[in-house]
Amino acid sequence: MNRLWPYSLFLCSATLAWATPGWCWGPAGHRVIGADALAMLDATARAEVVEILGSDSNDVIDEACSWPDTVRETAEWEWSAPQHYVNIPRSAAHYDRSRDCPDDLCVIEGIGKYARELGNADITGEQRWQAFAWLCHLVGDLHQPLHAGYRDDRGGNQVEIKYRGESHNLHQFWDRVLINERLASGDDWDKPGQGCSGPKAGSNWDPASVSDWADESHDLVARFAYPPAAEIDEAFADQCWLVTRRQWVKAAKRLAQVLNSALGEVE
Image (cartoon, rainbow, N blue to C red; front, side, top):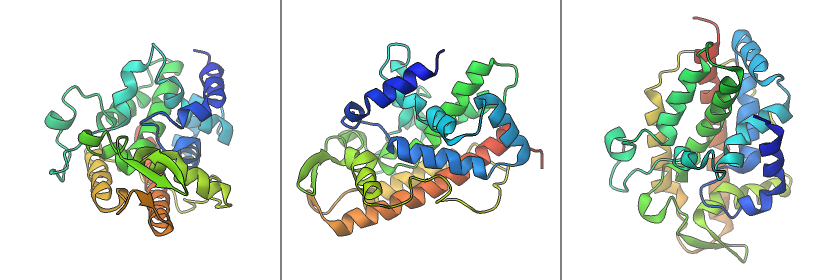
C-alpha cells in the first residue's frame, strides 16, 4: 500500500471530514496521543515501533495514528466504520460483549485484535504498520466519550446544538469543533509532549481492562457529554475541554502500556 496516498487524501479532504459523523478527536488529538505514548515506551518497544514505522518523527506518528480515518470510507475499508466506536445502552453501566459487540466489530474488540497482531513478528511489515495505526487510533477513539455513547442518538450525532452562534451536532462538537476553537485560541495541547512527560509506562497491560476503559467513557457520557441546553455556553465548553485533555492523557498512557506489553521488555 502507498501510505502517502491516504494521508494526502486526508489532508485534502479535512474540511469535508469535519462534517462526517463518527470521526474522533481530529488529527490534533490522535497526534498528541500517539507522540506522548511513544515518549513513555521502554527502549525495546520504542525500537520496535521505529522499525515498524521507519521513524519516530511526529509526522510519521501523525500519519499512522490518523490513517484509519483517511481510509474508512474507501471501498476497501468501509467495513471498518463500526470499529471506531461501541454503543452501550443508556440503562447499562458496563460493556457486555454479547449485547454490544456480538460480531466483534467495535472499538473494544478492535484494540485487542490489533494488539495481538502487532505482537506477531510473523506477519508482514505492512500488516504490522496497519496494526500499529489501528491500535493508536482506536485507543484514542475509545477515550472520546461519545464513542461509547448511545445507539438511539448515534453517539450524539442526532443531537443538534449551537456553539458561538453556529449549528453543529453534539458529536461534531466533541470531535472537532471545541478542539479546533481552543487550539486556535492558543492552547498548546496540540504539541506532542504537553500531556505526558512522566515516567515510562509499564508493560503489565491486561486486555480485559479495555472494557473498563469503555465503561469509563460511557460514564462520562452520562455525566458530562450532554449540555443542559441546546445553546452551549462557555462554562460547559470549559468543562468539556478539561475532560478532553484528561482523556488524551489517559489514552496516551494506556496506549504506551499496550505497546510495551506487545513489543517491549519482559518484566
